[in-house]
Image (tube, rainbow, N blue to C red):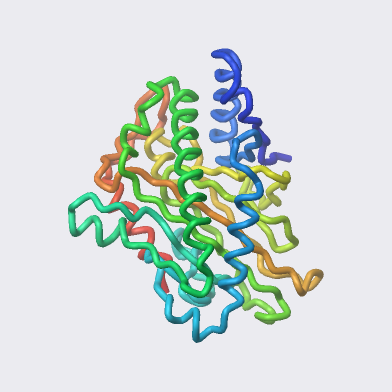
Length: 318
């Protein structure tokens, strides 16, 4: 049975050319076969994610009327209440709303184009009730940006193109970080038919960096054999997958793969999970043109990153 491989990034950061080449080869293999991998040796302290998760739990524990002051919809900054998102619609699968609530932050430095800034570089919202969220998330976003850029350099190396091939189109990128709380069954009750914590979907951008907790109602990945498998969990690792834009960029050499988060399970009625998900994109005005053979195998029509991503975000908004 296929599984999601674990790749140690230590040799990439600390080794010589041969070590880096071996890591790049493993990444290429993982992204060709399943579109997912777990990475260790990434250099981001585990305790930072723990502190972010603890602060987020304090926010999510606030009364609904307090959180409602920060209520927004998909693509905006602030609190996304339960019921506003259904990820299955991104692939044309009608599903009930996802069983989660989210606090979203992201890129907030405008480029001076009002129509672009209004979509991709909104001002972040910081809850006064949990003041530690701002410094913690500011630090976390900086760490994720650095790691995401390094992953794009690694991806370029794996393809045999210049190291800056992707990062040259991400010098003023859009990105979003979602902190997802998946409430326990004891709170939300039995799910509706076809309802998930997050419905089946692919991600939309370049790379996604996921800091998750293990659980019965956890992450599943779709295999080329047509099966859903539980993603393995390694403490201190990040789960990495690529999105539609990067797959398109590689001419579908790499897979932007379907995944889902299972609904809460009766065997663990009090299971509550909090995931930290960093969605990295590129410059909104970047034109994504498929790489040709021998790298790519499908030549997609060129797309503007902003146009492509907005269409996807609209699809999942209820």
